[in-house]
Length: 219
Ligand SMILES: Cc1cc2nc3c(=O)[nH]c(=O)nc-3n(C[C@H](O)[C@H](O)[C@H](O)COP(=O)(O)O)c2cc1C
Image (cartoon, rainbow, N blue to C red):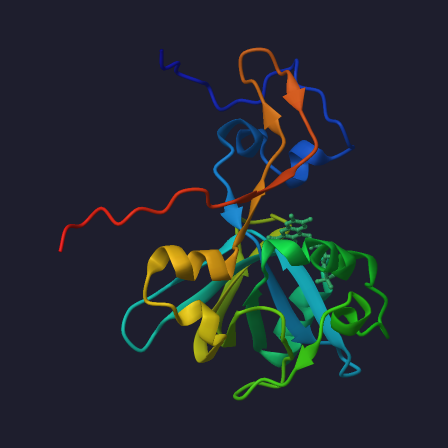
């Protein structure tokens, strides 16, 4: 049975960490539609490589304008790096590299090479100065087109950049979509869940993989 749910956050909802339902909407934990995880890589002011593990973003755009959209916290290093340099790379990591992905969050000091120190391998980009991550089987190079806050006084900021170059592992070029997605092993950010009727929570966050890809169009 489908229920109609008011979007006002109910009083019975308890944060399991302070500020959780300010930085994020409680609706995200009710709806639980997962986003793919990707790494945004930029250059710090001193030239050191920076990595930001992200899941709010997507790829979109028409001929000649294929673009990367990012939603970044305005206190992140990546936010400042993109405003300063106008460039970034996006890489899609395989599930098996989730420990390295999360290690990018721990190595966050100004002089850290966040890519190498997290256990990844640095790779030079072709069209931008921002570094790429060799282990990501799809890497996109992007140049900033526009940016704006998500809403007035929101800590979340949107960036859109045109894709200027693409690098892909040959294994990810398999014509069969099932084989291709197996090679990509894309990882999804699956939020901890909230039951909107009671506020009951099940945490922590999980990671997901695509479990079913079918060729539904005959011929
Ligand atoms: C699963 C997951 C998804 C995340 N998604 C985002 C995101 O979409 N945007 C963002 O700004 N931070 C996101 N974060 C937080 C950043 O990874 C984290 O703040 C990082 O340390 C910022 O790095 P920076 O300051 O070097 O940019 C996410 C963290 C996790 C664990």
